[in-house]
Image (cartoon, rainbow, N blue to C red; front, side, top):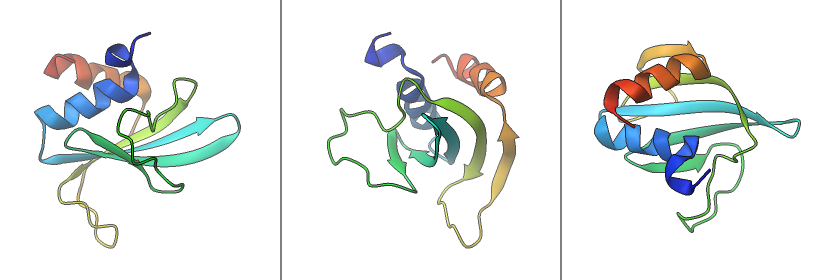
Amino acid sequence: MSDRQSLGWRLEQYTLKRPQEVLLVTIEDQGDTDQIAIFKGFSSSLMRSTDFDPDIPVLPATAKIMTVDRLQSPYTPQSPRYIQQGLSAEEMHQLLAEVGV
């Protein structure tokens, strides 16, 4: 799968089309859990260091999405404003299709 077809790239494109939203993606990869924030086309791990090179994917191709939360931007960890919580990967794929990514 090319970078332009990867799920991480598609989620970033979604946030470019919906800049009023922040996605919080909880993943599991090789037995480790991570939470990734995606906003306006950029991804950042909330639990690990994130490489400064935007060409290095934050969401590994081997990762399994556990849940996706949609929040209103700006994201404030102390008082998040949820649009939807606990979306499955399948539900997120539907939203990606709705915006054409």
